[in-house]
Amino acid sequence: MGEGTVDGKRYINIDDSRYEVDEKYYPIFKNQLVMSQNMTFLLNMYGKVAGISDAVGSNNYNFGYYMVHGVKAGLDNRVIMRLYTQSEGIKAFTLAKRVVIDGKSYRNDSILSAWETALANSQAELDKFPGKPSGVRTRAIRYKLNEAGEIIDIDTPYHGENESDNTLRITAVNDDSDYIWIGIIGKSITFNQNTVMFKVPNEELIKSATDKMFSSSVGVKSFKNKTGVIAYKTSVESGVSDLIVNIAEITNTFATSDHIMFDSIVTSIDKDGFAVDVLTGWKAGAKVEYVISSDVVNEQNQSVKIQDADIEKGDMLIYTLDASNEVSAYCKIYDWRDEQTYPTPTNKVFTKDGHDFYGMRMTFGYAKHKYTDGTIDISYTKGGSVEEAYPANNITITVFDREGRKNNIYKGSISDVAAFDDAGANCSVMIVYAEYAVWKSCYIYK
Image (cartoon, rainbow, N blue to C red; front, side):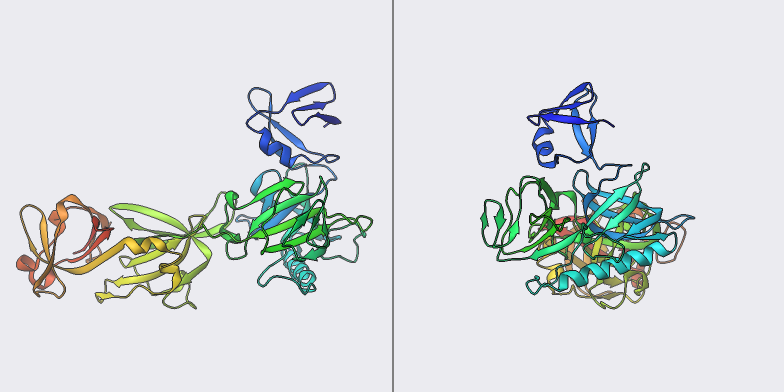
């Protein structure tokens, strides 16, 4: 670590060394650089500056935007926290075994409850402002890291008993922010060239948000009006905001939608150390898996989580994936045990937000007759009249063996189909899946 200067933001001088900022990184670099603050510069293979990371092992605070926390899987049950950071985007941090939160020190098992109390206290500070937009939470914090990159100090907008006056405070909320002047948003939110601005997604998206939904800059370049604006400062002697959070209305994050033959739910550990539930199943002859969002919604019974729902191996589900590719909503559409189908809910999660379902079609029926060229006649009732015909030899077939033999879900073929003309009441149940009138796959229960 050494003292440094910046020449026109294109070169950095540290002690006796001079480093050039990579031209591809320069547009980002100029928005992240904060004068008079310790920063760690990352060099690429050519020795040029190509990144900035949070200051570690220093006495400087970093601004962050809290997203979610949990307990790290393992023997020591350490608290982990996912933040949007000014310099590195979304990143997960482990909290040290001793952490100062709003001026008070906590150790080991007391850290989790202390942090959750701090969240409640911070929200109470925001709720004091009459202009607070509905549904908005305060998530801005300052934090310090030790040499290991663990969080050792958290400063929230709540003013703790042991804190000095120079801590994070909320100064204004949504203050007539329909217009912006030089140095002023609305009537009283002030800023200068060193004010940090976070643009963040709204509460509905925050837990599943991706880096693309956030942005940060030094100096207020622009903001979205008609949305939430929260201003913070860290010194009682200053009238200028140190941090401005603009909560943007993001409307282009539609869920994607699909179907799956259910296999199981397993518990796993994600890359950040969070314990997650994972939905496993089969789609188009291949096994797939998706992390289940902590906010997953059962569209048939919203009080029942997917882990507790009446779903057995072999049942068919439809589901939506959020921006983080996690299962955010689901419903059962076929129960193989009693050969019962269920309608797709008509609420927006499977129509407006789950817009992919507009082009989906799933046909349920029984194999009536199988031709040598692979075409299969389907009846809607067992042994009933033929209603539809499908060229099944050109689509992927997934088979569920109702006898429960080992590996009873697998990629099959036309030979696995038992038609009523040959097998009588033991004929196969067929679910044929299509997208925009193109047959994609077929599911056989034999």
